[in-house]
Length: 372
Ligand SMILES: *Cc1c(COP(=O)(O)O)cnc(C)c1O
Image: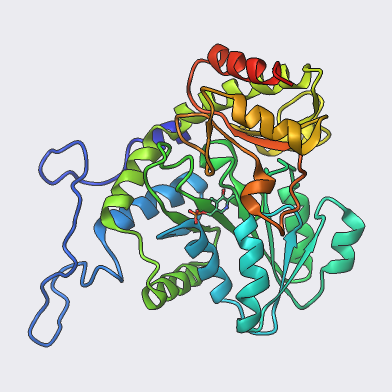
C-alpha cells in the first residue's frame, strides 16, 4: 500500500463498527487479586490504547520497527539522550533547534554527556569530529532556522563506521515528505506539535526506531520512569492529524515554493532559504531525500534587523507567533525569539506557510515589503 493509504487505513478490528476510534481515558484497568494481568492494559503511565495506536501508525509511516511517543518533542529527544552511557559524546549540526542546544549545554553535562556542534555539511570537519567516543550524531534536515539540508545517507555511512547512531529531527519534513530511516538513520524524531497535529492545538513528540526493538523497550522504560507521557486525547488528535498529513503537506509545499520564488525576486530580499528553490545550493541533496520542499522557509532582508522587524510589524494576514505547521501562516523574527544566545541573523524572518490561498499570502508580504 502507498503511504497516503497507510495513513488512513489501520489494520485494526472495529469492535462496534465505529469508523473513528474511541478515546480511552481510563487511567487504570482491572487485574486479578494478586495483580494477575486480565487485560492488555494496566496503568496509563505504562501504556494506553490511543498512545499505542498512534505509535503503530507512526512506525508504519516511517518504516521503523517501532515508535515511542511522548508529551512533547523535547521529551522525546531527552528520553533518547537518557539512554546514553555517561562519558558518551553527542555531535550536533550547528544550526539546531534552539532548545536542543540549551538542553545539550545545560542539562546533558549533569548526566556525563558532552555535546559538540559542528557543520555537518563540512566533510573534513565531520571526519575530524567522529571518533569511537561518538555515541550519537544529531541533526535536523531541513534545519532550523536556516533550512540547511544534511545528506542523511552520507552522514549515516560515516557515523556507522565508528559505531555511532544517527538521530534525524525530521519535524519540518514530516513522514509525508522524508523517511530518514530508509536513508540509513537509526532514529527519527518528530515534534508532533507541528505538522502532524497540523492545527496549532495539540502537543506531542515521537522517536521512531529503525531496527532495534530493544531500544523501543528502553525508550518506553524511560518514559514510564520519567513520566513524559502523552495524554490519550492528544494521542487521538495526533492519530487523526496523521490521516490528512500527506494532503496538507502537498499544499503547504506548493504554497511555500510560490512564496519562496516571489521573495527570491524581491529587491529588498538578500537571500531566501527554501529546500526546493532552484537557486538553493543544497537542491540536489534536498531532491534526493525529500519528495517536496515542505512549508517552512526563511529569508534575509538586505536592511538587516530593522527591516526584518518592520516587515514583521506590517503584515496583516501572517501572524507573529512562534511554532509552525498549522493551517494559518506565521511569521517570526527568530533572533528576537531566541534571545541573547541566538545565532540567527538579525535580518532573518522565518515563515511557516499555511493553507491559505497563495495569492493572499503573496499580497500580504509584498505590501509589508513595500513599506521598506
Ligand atoms: C518544535 C520543535 C521541537 C520541539 O518540540 P516540542 O513539541 O515543542 O517539544 C524540536 N525540533 C524541532 C525542529 C521543532 O520545530
